[in-house]
Length: 236
Ligand code: TMP
Ligand code: ASP
Image 1 (spheres, protein in one colour):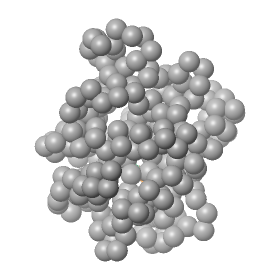
Image 2 (cartoon, rainbow, N blue to C red):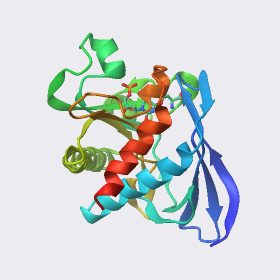
Image 3 (tube, rainbow, N blue to C red):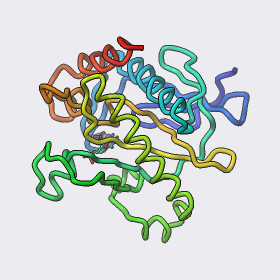
């Protein structure tokens, strides 16, 4: 497998072509940003940890019958993935009120929701990823109705799988963000699953084990990511 031209650089990852048009190489960087890149830092080893954590989560989902873009881990910071045409819609799944939902709706952080909430945002940094609904998605032709049906069913299944798996490790899955893309006519899960894109709370102490430690200047960011990895690898 040849590492080819870089085709995309995001805030936390770079994507490269390979000699196989059906596969891309994703490289996880140490950069951390928040508030649309206004707050920036380098967190040593974050890329290594998120590469490992994403591989564990994608592997788990595959064994549970959810197709993801993950093919294999090729180095400390790189994974081989199926080439995707990313659908520019961020899919957020929430079990407990936190973050922007708490702010927007005046719900205390930590309040359990009676029903799982799915939200959509347009993936556009310049516009600050505005929240959108199905009407916007179809009006802007971001995805078709059948694709959205697949995405929502998949997001809820992923929530069930991850919630149960993490509960067993003493971690509460508060909320998370997913991105999907098209590959050979199918809509499959892409991007990453890591403490950058999920809220993980320690089930007994409520301690935050995710990127909120960076966003809110709580310190111990990398230590928290390492703790998540320790709990997941400890029982493999
Ligand atoms: P929010 O409460 O800030 O809207 O975040 C909801 C979830 O989405 C949370 O688990 C963090 C994740 N997230 C991202 O992955 N990328 C982002 O740019 C933002 C704002 C949130
Ligand atoms: N990834 C987003 C940004 O840079 C924000 C976040 O994760 O909070 O700015």
